[in-house]
Image: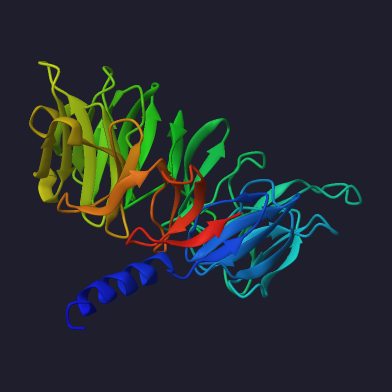
Length: 371
């Protein structure tokens, strides 16, 4: 019997792997996870599942866009009244469905829009700030064109006044003047702004840290770094002081996450290079096609949950860790970024030719299957 025990153990191990717990779900559309919740659509109504595939919020709500959780709440529309409000992760109403229009929360406050009243002669449309948990409508009017959609990030919100752009704070003061042709949201204390149709970067005091010089806006800052794009469509890296850490070099880059960024380019001699960028813009890992040949890895996302989506060739997708090691095998025909420990993936079984779609965990096991 002793000769058969190892074989028996292997067979049992394989069986347990094949029988990894999976939840099957069936909806018309499934989004991506954020804050542990994933939007699902049945007919024209939205609901949410959790990371185990359990239906937590029934698909009975309206939304003009794919809804998502932010700061622990989600904005939805009541199909009966057409008014907007917010639910928490248990499906409990935390801000009443009483708003004509309101932005998603990206901070502890957001912006609500109030139409003019036909019954009041001097009534006018206006914007006001709304506190997140209490749903308290603050009394002051925000200095923002009513037709311009905005929200707060890091205590500041984009504002359009007299066709020019600046930033307002929660008490409704225009703290960064409306002198810009266009502006982007604040991230990591930095925001891209356009003067004379060229883009630069300011800090939260309004001071210019990266002079306007390119025709496309730098990517949002993350982890203290931001990618900028020159007029030849090559990306370089700057820090929060505006110091150029990497001159424009890369063809494709992704935002920093977990302290690392990913980048790809072709060299003048037609070699291909993938870099994982670490602190101070230094290359932490390098892949070269001339060395790796058919195993060359091309990034398809930045890092989230410690993993970045990547591909080998044109049809094999998987995930690498921050050291460049394969964390999830390159066996999928499609993957999306990890969030909340889950990533959408598609896999074609070579034996049955059946396409399996669903969400995998960070080990690459399907835990939720889409029927």
